[in-house]
Image 1: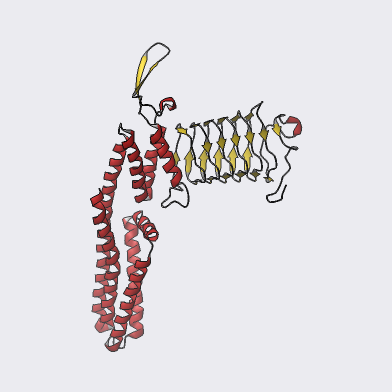
Image 2 (image 1 turned 90 degrees about the vertical axis):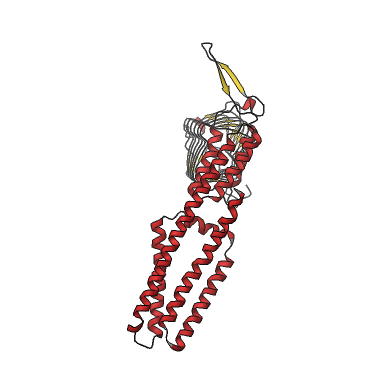
Length: 419
Protein backbone atom coordinates (compact mmCIF):
# COMPACT_ATOMS: atom_id res chain seq x y z
CA UNK A 1 0.00 0.00 0.00
CA UNK A 2 2.90 2.37 0.65
CA UNK A 3 3.84 2.23 -3.02
CA UNK A 4 0.42 3.59 -3.99
CA UNK A 5 1.05 6.93 -2.28
CA UNK A 6 3.56 8.36 -4.79
CA UNK A 7 1.46 7.76 -7.97
CA UNK A 8 -1.59 9.23 -6.24
CA UNK A 9 0.38 12.28 -5.16
CA UNK A 10 1.85 12.74 -8.63
CA UNK A 11 -1.63 12.55 -10.20
CA UNK A 12 -3.03 15.11 -7.76
CA UNK A 13 -0.13 17.51 -8.34
CA UNK A 14 -0.45 17.06 -12.11
CA UNK A 15 -4.18 17.76 -11.93
CA UNK A 16 -3.64 20.92 -9.89
CA UNK A 17 -1.01 22.13 -12.34
CA UNK A 18 -2.94 21.11 -15.47
CA UNK A 19 -6.15 22.97 -14.62
CA UNK A 20 -4.72 26.53 -14.52
CA UNK A 21 -2.44 25.79 -17.50
CA UNK A 22 -5.29 24.55 -19.72
CA UNK A 23 -7.63 27.39 -18.75
CA UNK A 24 -4.81 29.89 -19.13
CA UNK A 25 -3.88 28.50 -22.53
CA UNK A 26 -7.50 28.75 -23.69
CA UNK A 27 -7.79 32.38 -22.59
CA UNK A 28 -4.34 33.10 -24.04
CA UNK A 29 -5.36 31.79 -27.42
CA UNK A 30 -8.69 33.57 -27.27
CA UNK A 31 -7.00 36.87 -26.53
CA UNK A 32 -4.52 36.29 -29.33
CA UNK A 33 -7.32 35.59 -31.82
CA UNK A 34 -9.52 38.51 -30.82
CA UNK A 35 -7.06 41.32 -30.27
CA UNK A 36 -5.45 42.83 -33.35
CA UNK A 37 -2.12 44.55 -33.50
CA UNK A 38 -0.70 46.02 -30.33
CA UNK A 39 -3.79 45.05 -28.35
CA UNK A 40 -2.90 41.40 -28.89
CA UNK A 41 0.38 41.93 -27.02
CA UNK A 42 -1.49 43.64 -24.18
CA UNK A 43 -3.94 40.74 -23.99
CA UNK A 44 -1.17 38.17 -23.98
CA UNK A 45 0.62 40.06 -21.21
CA UNK A 46 -2.52 40.14 -19.08
CA UNK A 47 -3.07 36.42 -19.58
CA UNK A 48 0.54 35.65 -18.61
CA UNK A 49 0.14 37.75 -15.45
CA UNK A 50 -3.11 35.93 -14.69
CA UNK A 51 -1.51 32.50 -15.05
CA UNK A 52 1.35 33.63 -12.82
CA UNK A 53 -1.12 34.83 -10.16
CA UNK A 54 -2.95 31.49 -10.26
CA UNK A 55 0.34 29.65 -9.80
CA UNK A 56 1.32 31.81 -6.82
CA UNK A 57 -2.05 31.29 -5.12
CA UNK A 58 -1.83 27.53 -5.70
CA UNK A 59 1.67 27.45 -4.24
CA UNK A 60 0.62 29.42 -1.16
CA UNK A 61 -2.38 27.26 -0.36
CA UNK A 62 -1.76 25.41 2.92
CA UNK A 63 -2.07 21.65 3.06
CA UNK A 64 -5.14 22.03 5.28
CA UNK A 65 -6.84 24.27 2.69
CA UNK A 66 -6.04 21.84 -0.14
CA UNK A 67 -7.37 18.96 1.96
CA UNK A 68 -10.60 20.85 2.66
CA UNK A 69 -11.01 21.59 -1.05
CA UNK A 70 -10.32 17.97 -1.93
CA UNK A 71 -12.93 16.74 0.55
CA UNK A 72 -15.44 19.25 -0.80
CA UNK A 73 -14.80 18.19 -4.39
CA UNK A 74 -14.81 14.50 -3.42
CA UNK A 75 -18.33 14.80 -2.06
CA UNK A 76 -19.61 16.54 -5.21
CA UNK A 77 -21.60 14.53 -7.72
CA UNK A 78 -20.68 14.30 -11.40
CA UNK A 79 -23.59 16.59 -12.29
CA UNK A 80 -22.43 19.15 -9.73
CA UNK A 81 -18.89 19.01 -11.07
CA UNK A 82 -20.07 19.55 -14.64
CA UNK A 83 -22.31 22.45 -13.62
CA UNK A 84 -19.54 24.06 -11.59
CA UNK A 85 -16.94 23.75 -14.33
CA UNK A 86 -19.47 24.86 -16.94
CA UNK A 87 -20.19 27.97 -14.89
CA UNK A 88 -16.47 28.74 -14.75
CA UNK A 89 -16.23 28.28 -18.51
CA UNK A 90 -19.18 30.60 -19.12
CA UNK A 91 -17.59 33.19 -16.85
CA UNK A 92 -14.31 32.97 -18.76
CA UNK A 93 -16.16 33.33 -22.06
CA UNK A 94 -18.15 36.35 -20.83
CA UNK A 95 -15.07 38.08 -19.49
CA UNK A 96 -13.24 37.41 -22.74
CA UNK A 97 -16.22 38.73 -24.70
CA UNK A 98 -16.31 41.92 -22.65
CA UNK A 99 -12.59 42.33 -23.10
CA UNK A 100 -13.14 41.75 -26.80
CA UNK A 101 -15.82 44.41 -27.08
CA UNK A 102 -13.75 46.96 -25.19
CA UNK A 103 -10.51 46.53 -27.13
CA UNK A 104 -11.48 45.25 -30.56
CA UNK A 105 -10.98 47.89 -33.22
CA UNK A 106 -11.91 45.89 -36.23
CA UNK A 107 -15.15 44.26 -37.23
CA UNK A 108 -16.25 41.31 -35.06
CA UNK A 109 -17.43 39.22 -37.97
CA UNK A 110 -13.96 38.17 -39.15
CA UNK A 111 -13.15 36.81 -35.68
CA UNK A 112 -16.45 35.10 -34.93
CA UNK A 113 -15.28 31.73 -36.24
CA UNK A 114 -12.05 31.87 -34.22
CA UNK A 115 -14.01 32.89 -31.13
CA UNK A 116 -16.38 29.95 -31.51
CA UNK A 117 -13.50 27.51 -32.05
CA UNK A 118 -11.66 28.64 -28.94
CA UNK A 119 -14.86 28.51 -26.89
CA UNK A 120 -15.53 24.95 -28.08
CA UNK A 121 -11.94 24.01 -27.28
CA UNK A 122 -12.31 25.42 -23.77
CA UNK A 123 -15.51 23.48 -23.13
CA UNK A 124 -13.88 20.34 -24.52
CA UNK A 125 -11.07 20.82 -22.04
CA UNK A 126 -13.57 21.10 -19.20
CA UNK A 127 -15.22 17.83 -20.24
CA UNK A 128 -11.81 16.16 -20.41
CA UNK A 129 -11.02 17.37 -16.91
CA UNK A 130 -14.32 16.01 -15.60
CA UNK A 131 -13.61 12.62 -17.14
CA UNK A 132 -10.08 12.61 -15.68
CA UNK A 133 -11.44 13.59 -12.28
CA UNK A 134 -13.99 10.77 -12.33
CA UNK A 135 -11.31 8.25 -13.27
CA UNK A 136 -9.19 9.45 -10.38
CA UNK A 137 -12.13 9.15 -7.98
CA UNK A 138 -12.84 5.59 -9.13
CA UNK A 139 -9.20 4.71 -8.54
CA UNK A 140 -9.18 6.34 -5.09
CA UNK A 141 -12.40 4.55 -4.15
CA UNK A 142 -10.72 1.29 -5.05
CA UNK A 143 -7.76 2.16 -2.85
CA UNK A 144 -10.16 2.97 0.02
CA UNK A 145 -11.84 -0.42 -0.28
CA UNK A 146 -8.46 -2.13 -0.26
CA UNK A 147 -7.14 -0.22 2.76
CA UNK A 148 -10.44 -0.52 4.63
CA UNK A 149 -10.50 -4.29 4.10
CA UNK A 150 -6.89 -4.67 5.28
CA UNK A 151 -7.58 -2.67 8.48
CA UNK A 152 -10.78 -4.63 9.18
CA UNK A 153 -8.88 -7.90 8.77
CA UNK A 154 -6.32 -6.76 11.33
CA UNK A 155 -9.11 -5.89 13.79
CA UNK A 156 -10.34 -9.47 13.56
CA UNK A 157 -6.93 -11.04 14.20
CA UNK A 158 -6.38 -13.25 17.25
CA UNK A 159 -3.15 -11.43 18.19
CA UNK A 160 -3.91 -8.29 20.28
CA UNK A 161 -0.85 -6.50 18.86
CA UNK A 162 -2.21 -6.95 15.34
CA UNK A 163 -5.63 -5.74 16.45
CA UNK A 164 -4.09 -2.59 17.93
CA UNK A 165 -2.32 -2.00 14.60
CA UNK A 166 -5.70 -2.44 12.93
CA UNK A 167 -7.17 0.27 15.16
CA UNK A 168 -4.56 2.79 14.05
CA UNK A 169 -4.90 1.67 10.44
CA UNK A 170 -8.67 2.14 10.49
CA UNK A 171 -8.27 5.60 12.03
CA UNK A 172 -5.78 6.49 9.29
CA UNK A 173 -8.20 5.37 6.59
CA UNK A 174 -10.90 7.52 8.21
CA UNK A 175 -8.66 10.58 8.29
CA UNK A 176 -7.88 10.34 4.57
CA UNK A 177 -11.35 9.46 3.33
CA UNK A 178 -14.41 11.43 2.34
CA UNK A 179 -16.95 12.33 5.05
CA UNK A 180 -19.00 9.22 4.19
CA UNK A 181 -15.91 7.01 4.29
CA UNK A 182 -14.85 8.58 7.58
CA UNK A 183 -18.23 7.75 9.12
CA UNK A 184 -17.94 4.17 7.85
CA UNK A 185 -14.58 3.70 9.61
CA UNK A 186 -15.88 5.26 12.83
CA UNK A 187 -18.85 2.88 12.76
CA UNK A 188 -16.42 -0.05 12.63
CA UNK A 189 -14.44 1.19 15.64
CA UNK A 190 -17.61 1.83 17.65
CA UNK A 191 -18.93 -1.56 16.56
CA UNK A 192 -15.83 -3.23 17.99
CA UNK A 193 -16.61 -1.69 21.40
CA UNK A 194 -20.15 -3.05 21.20
CA UNK A 195 -18.95 -6.64 20.79
CA UNK A 196 -19.48 -8.97 23.78
CA UNK A 197 -16.79 -8.36 26.37
CA UNK A 198 -16.03 -9.77 29.80
CA UNK A 199 -14.22 -7.10 31.88
CA UNK A 200 -13.22 -9.73 34.47
CA UNK A 201 -10.95 -11.33 31.87
CA UNK A 202 -10.13 -8.26 29.80
CA UNK A 203 -6.39 -8.53 30.32
CA UNK A 204 -6.12 -12.29 30.58
CA UNK A 205 -5.08 -14.80 27.95
CA UNK A 206 -8.42 -16.59 28.28
CA UNK A 207 -9.44 -17.96 24.89
CA UNK A 208 -12.79 -19.50 25.80
CA UNK A 209 -15.36 -19.35 28.54
CA UNK A 210 -17.82 -21.99 29.74
CA UNK A 211 -21.15 -21.13 31.27
CA UNK A 212 -24.00 -23.35 32.48
CA UNK A 213 -27.63 -22.30 32.19
CA UNK A 214 -30.45 -23.01 34.64
CA UNK A 215 -31.22 -26.38 33.12
CA UNK A 216 -27.60 -27.50 33.40
CA UNK A 217 -26.59 -27.18 29.78
CA UNK A 218 -23.03 -25.99 29.42
CA UNK A 219 -22.08 -23.57 26.64
CA UNK A 220 -18.61 -22.58 25.47
CA UNK A 221 -17.92 -19.03 24.31
CA UNK A 222 -14.87 -17.81 22.42
CA UNK A 223 -13.40 -14.64 23.90
CA UNK A 224 -10.67 -12.29 22.67
CA UNK A 225 -7.53 -12.67 24.72
CA UNK A 226 -6.00 -9.46 26.14
CA UNK A 227 -8.74 -7.33 24.59
CA UNK A 228 -8.67 -4.55 27.19
CA UNK A 229 -5.66 -2.86 25.60
CA UNK A 230 -7.31 -2.93 22.18
CA UNK A 231 -10.54 -1.41 23.47
CA UNK A 232 -8.79 1.31 25.45
CA UNK A 233 -6.78 2.19 22.35
CA UNK A 234 -10.04 2.66 20.43
CA UNK A 235 -11.45 4.84 23.23
CA UNK A 236 -8.31 6.99 23.27
CA UNK A 237 -8.24 7.48 19.49
CA UNK A 238 -11.91 8.44 19.38
CA UNK A 239 -11.44 10.89 22.25
CA UNK A 240 -8.44 12.50 20.53
CA UNK A 241 -10.39 12.96 17.31
CA UNK A 242 -13.35 14.55 19.13
CA UNK A 243 -11.30 17.62 20.06
CA UNK A 244 -11.75 20.61 17.80
CA UNK A 245 -8.01 21.29 17.59
CA UNK A 246 -7.33 17.80 16.20
CA UNK A 247 -6.42 17.69 12.49
CA UNK A 248 -8.42 16.11 11.07
CA UNK A 249 -11.14 15.71 13.67
CA UNK A 250 -14.29 13.65 13.88
CA UNK A 251 -16.43 16.36 15.48
CA UNK A 252 -19.92 16.19 14.01
CA UNK A 253 -19.76 12.48 13.20
CA UNK A 254 -22.26 10.02 14.66
CA UNK A 255 -21.12 7.69 17.46
CA UNK A 256 -22.93 4.51 18.45
CA UNK A 257 -21.85 3.01 21.81
CA UNK A 258 -25.17 1.35 22.62
CA UNK A 259 -24.62 -1.56 25.00
CA UNK A 260 -20.83 -1.14 24.93
CA UNK A 261 -18.61 -1.89 27.92
CA UNK A 262 -16.29 1.09 28.40
CA UNK A 263 -13.51 1.01 31.01
CA UNK A 264 -11.67 4.03 32.44
CA UNK A 265 -13.25 6.42 29.97
CA UNK A 266 -11.74 9.87 29.50
CA UNK A 267 -13.76 12.05 27.13
CA UNK A 268 -12.60 15.31 28.72
CA UNK A 269 -12.72 18.40 26.46
CA UNK A 270 -14.41 16.49 23.66
CA UNK A 271 -17.23 17.76 21.44
CA UNK A 272 -20.33 15.69 20.72
CA UNK A 273 -22.22 17.57 18.03
CA UNK A 274 -23.67 14.70 16.03
CA UNK A 275 -25.89 11.82 17.12
CA UNK A 276 -24.14 10.16 20.08
CA UNK A 277 -25.73 7.13 21.74
CA UNK A 278 -24.47 5.64 25.01
CA UNK A 279 -27.79 3.87 25.65
CA UNK A 280 -27.39 0.86 27.99
CA UNK A 281 -23.60 1.29 27.97
CA UNK A 282 -21.62 0.21 31.04
CA UNK A 283 -18.99 2.68 32.29
CA UNK A 284 -16.59 0.80 34.56
CA UNK A 285 -14.00 2.61 36.69
CA UNK A 286 -13.41 6.35 36.60
CA UNK A 287 -15.46 8.10 33.92
CA UNK A 288 -14.54 11.63 32.83
CA UNK A 289 -16.56 13.99 30.64
CA UNK A 290 -15.05 17.12 32.20
CA UNK A 291 -15.40 20.27 30.07
CA UNK A 292 -16.93 18.32 27.23
CA UNK A 293 -19.64 19.82 25.02
CA UNK A 294 -22.85 17.94 24.26
CA UNK A 295 -24.29 20.14 21.52
CA UNK A 296 -26.00 17.46 19.46
CA UNK A 297 -28.37 14.66 20.43
CA UNK A 298 -26.54 12.78 23.22
CA UNK A 299 -28.25 9.81 24.87
CA UNK A 300 -27.24 8.05 28.10
CA UNK A 301 -30.60 6.32 28.57
CA UNK A 302 -30.25 3.15 30.63
CA UNK A 303 -26.48 3.60 31.00
CA UNK A 304 -24.77 2.18 34.09
CA UNK A 305 -21.91 4.13 35.69
CA UNK A 306 -19.92 1.88 38.02
CA UNK A 307 -17.39 4.08 39.76
CA UNK A 308 -16.76 7.82 40.19
CA UNK A 309 -18.09 9.96 37.36
CA UNK A 310 -17.33 13.59 36.56
CA UNK A 311 -19.24 15.92 34.24
CA UNK A 312 -17.45 18.93 35.77
CA UNK A 313 -17.84 22.02 33.60
CA UNK A 314 -19.69 20.08 30.91
CA UNK A 315 -21.80 22.11 28.47
CA UNK A 316 -25.19 20.51 27.82
CA UNK A 317 -26.33 22.86 25.05
CA UNK A 318 -28.07 20.26 22.88
CA UNK A 319 -30.53 17.56 23.84
CA UNK A 320 -29.09 15.17 26.44
CA UNK A 321 -31.01 12.36 28.13
CA UNK A 322 -30.06 10.28 31.18
CA UNK A 323 -33.46 8.59 31.45
CA UNK A 324 -33.25 5.37 33.43
CA UNK A 325 -29.49 5.74 33.95
CA UNK A 326 -27.87 4.50 37.15
CA UNK A 327 -24.90 6.09 38.93
CA UNK A 328 -23.33 3.60 41.35
CA UNK A 329 -20.66 5.90 42.67
CA UNK A 330 -20.04 9.56 43.35
CA UNK A 331 -21.16 11.85 40.54
CA UNK A 332 -20.11 15.46 39.95
CA UNK A 333 -21.95 17.97 37.78
CA UNK A 334 -20.13 20.89 39.43
CA UNK A 335 -20.14 24.06 37.25
CA UNK A 336 -21.98 22.15 34.51
CA UNK A 337 -24.12 24.28 32.19
CA UNK A 338 -27.58 23.01 31.35
CA UNK A 339 -28.39 25.28 28.41
CA UNK A 340 -30.43 22.97 26.20
CA UNK A 341 -32.86 20.19 27.09
CA UNK A 342 -31.61 17.67 29.67
CA UNK A 343 -33.70 14.93 31.27
CA UNK A 344 -33.01 12.71 34.27
CA UNK A 345 -36.32 10.81 34.26
CA UNK A 346 -36.15 7.69 36.48
CA UNK A 347 -32.43 8.21 37.02
CA UNK A 348 -30.92 6.56 40.10
CA UNK A 349 -28.20 8.43 42.03
CA UNK A 350 -26.83 5.98 44.61
CA UNK A 351 -23.74 7.92 45.76
CA UNK A 352 -22.81 11.48 46.67
CA UNK A 353 -24.09 13.85 43.98
CA UNK A 354 -22.96 17.42 43.41
CA UNK A 355 -24.62 20.00 41.16
CA UNK A 356 -22.90 22.92 42.93
CA UNK A 357 -22.47 26.15 40.95
CA UNK A 358 -24.27 24.63 37.97
CA UNK A 359 -26.07 26.83 35.49
CA UNK A 360 -29.70 25.91 34.84
CA UNK A 361 -30.95 28.12 32.01
CA UNK A 362 -32.41 25.45 29.73
CA UNK A 363 -35.12 22.86 30.33
CA UNK A 364 -34.03 20.25 32.90
CA UNK A 365 -36.21 17.53 34.38
CA UNK A 366 -35.58 15.28 37.42
CA UNK A 367 -39.02 13.70 37.46
CA UNK A 368 -39.08 10.33 39.28
CA UNK A 369 -35.33 10.60 39.87
CA UNK A 370 -34.17 8.67 42.93
CA UNK A 371 -31.45 10.09 45.12
CA UNK A 372 -29.43 8.13 47.68
CA UNK A 373 -30.87 8.24 51.17
CA UNK A 374 -27.45 8.11 52.82
CA UNK A 375 -25.46 10.12 50.25
CA UNK A 376 -25.09 13.87 50.06
CA UNK A 377 -27.07 15.63 47.31
CA UNK A 378 -26.08 19.25 46.75
CA UNK A 379 -27.47 21.99 44.49
CA UNK A 380 -25.69 24.85 46.28
CA UNK A 381 -24.95 28.21 44.67
CA UNK A 382 -26.28 27.75 41.16
CA UNK A 383 -25.13 30.45 38.73
CA UNK A 384 -28.57 30.48 37.09
CA UNK A 385 -31.96 28.97 37.95
CA UNK A 386 -34.26 30.24 35.22
CA UNK A 387 -36.10 28.20 34.31
CA UNK A 388 -35.44 26.01 37.31
CA UNK A 389 -35.22 22.22 37.06
CA UNK A 390 -38.43 20.23 37.49
CA UNK A 391 -38.46 17.89 40.53
CA UNK A 392 -41.10 15.75 42.19
CA UNK A 393 -41.29 18.39 44.93
CA UNK A 394 -42.17 22.06 44.64
CA UNK A 395 -40.86 23.61 47.84
CA UNK A 396 -38.78 23.06 50.96
CA UNK A 397 -41.45 20.97 52.63
CA UNK A 398 -41.43 18.28 49.97
CA UNK A 399 -37.68 18.17 49.41
CA UNK A 400 -35.80 15.12 50.76
CA UNK A 401 -33.76 15.96 53.84
CA UNK A 402 -30.46 14.93 52.27
CA UNK A 403 -30.86 17.28 49.30
CA UNK A 404 -28.78 20.16 50.61
CA UNK A 405 -29.12 23.86 49.88
CA UNK A 406 -29.41 26.98 51.95
CA UNK A 407 -33.05 27.16 50.93
CA UNK A 408 -35.30 25.95 48.14
CA UNK A 409 -35.14 27.03 45.41
CA UNK A 410 -31.42 27.59 45.98
CA UNK A 411 -30.01 31.10 46.08
CA UNK A 412 -28.52 32.06 42.72
CA UNK A 413 -24.91 33.23 42.86
CA UNK A 414 -23.97 34.88 39.54
CA UNK A 415 -20.53 34.04 38.11
CA UNK A 416 -17.62 36.18 39.35
CA UNK A 417 -19.79 37.59 42.10
CA UNK A 418 -17.40 36.41 44.79
CA UNK A 419 -20.22 34.61 46.58
